[in-house]
Length: 190
Length: 63
Image 1 (tube, helix red, strand yellow):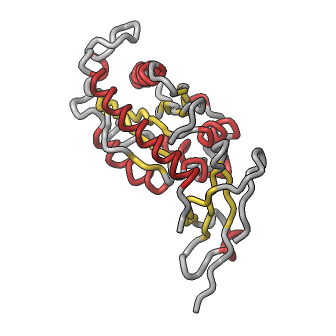
Image 2 (cartoon, rainbow over the protein chains, first blue to last red):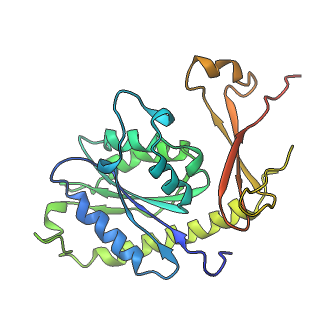
Image 3 (cartoon, one colour):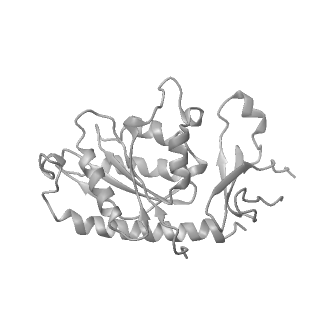
């Protein structure tokens, strides 16, 4: 059981660096919806802001700030746009810089696409990666199809039908985060 | 196994996971457990403050 006063930390990872990315309003919406929930702390982590070189990879290029954020996290929301039927290569590059920070923590994936499938192909490819990193994926996703029409020019949500879907997604993610925190702290490996 | 003590709270941390990790370079190749095919990272979490810690496990002994 989560102790009173110890909020869950559930950051939102924006998994693309592409200019003009439409995943940004999606990530901001998830941060906003998480912020409404009692006992939850969140922040937007933009992989474009991480100082990661591309002449090496993995934990050798671990960024101390990102590592500390992942260590503190109880769960992670990954906003993952689909590019050419896959997730972003730089999202993988960022995720690979940590490992022990992720173990037995919850993760939920929000797929984004300009087309009709809501990033599902990228999500399917990302799930085994998340599993190998030690994260525990929930069974709810949120899928933003034709994302260019979902938000207005100011980044406000046009289609309110996304909100109950996000609510279900976050309820499951928070339940898993609380359960896994209890397990990490109190259930010993035998 | 030696207990892992939380540096902040001074109490024993909970050992909740063992993750198989692969060597990242030639310098770690000699640390590979021949039985498991990699190295075991032990994961611990403090039941009071929630902070995490980890360490490499000793290789298992083949029979």
